[in-house]
Length: 399
Image 1: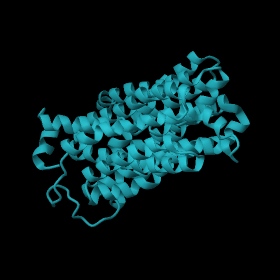
Image 2: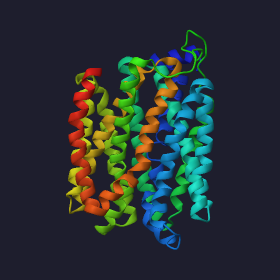
Image 3: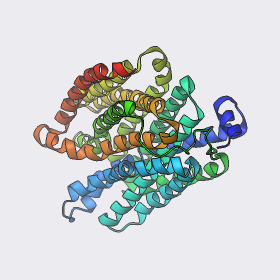
Image 4: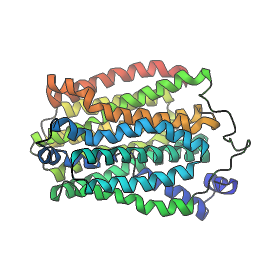
């Protein structure tokens, strides 16, 4: 974006600034739970493709391959954000999001479906990297923390809106939820009109510095934050990948499955909105540990639940923790990232988050076999609570 619009976005209520900020937040709603939109359809998909070898694993892969593609492509998206610009990356990614997302509806077989899901992942990785880079370009200090909280709230709000709708649509036709991805077509025109590319000169941070990693002194803190994002998301993504089957055991229909899973994202909205106020009062290490502990506590409640109400209670607690964790990790990386490689460093967070999503059902599978779905939630929750204490000790030195 140009300098005038950048200043307006930072400080003023001007119309162009409002459009730019609104566009970024609207784009954020399309991202975090994009792979999970088809979660309510998983049981039906397993029935439809029952004659396909390995259908039980491949059906789950239809959800998580999107996360793998996001994680693997995010570094390339980060490079594109730094070298080509935030706006071109966002526009191309939004267009691909619509084509690949809706394209799943028209596929005739499981292999073709997996291809469209992978392309959707490329799109989401580009969108997330572009909007994170834009936000950190626009703001610093408390305003950056506040807007990153809004970004996470918007991303979680997308789940609140889209997952129940996906549940309702999947009850009629398991393919119908793919039309939800058409929402990207409504954001695209505003991105074309409302965003301006940042000028690339030495005074703007500009991408004139030689490509490379962050300075040696901050590589390890950055790697630790990536690892935390991976672990938190690996645990969190048990909700869309495992809960549909746990709820089926509790005799919950597909429409209500979407509503129950959306509870997690609803409480994530609340956590993200509370983040700026808590960040101003608590140290970053304390906030990180508290967010991980809340996720663990929520999963312990889910793992010991015997009713849908108890499951919902656990999801509320765990979702609130995730709502705090993601913007906090994003803020810490933003503060550590040199401007010239900001897109690349922030893309690493996207990689950590979505590799955690992809590997979640694979790494949890042995635990499922030995303890069942409830036991898997319980032991994962206990591990997260223990990890929260370790994270507090490890991170307080980097505050």
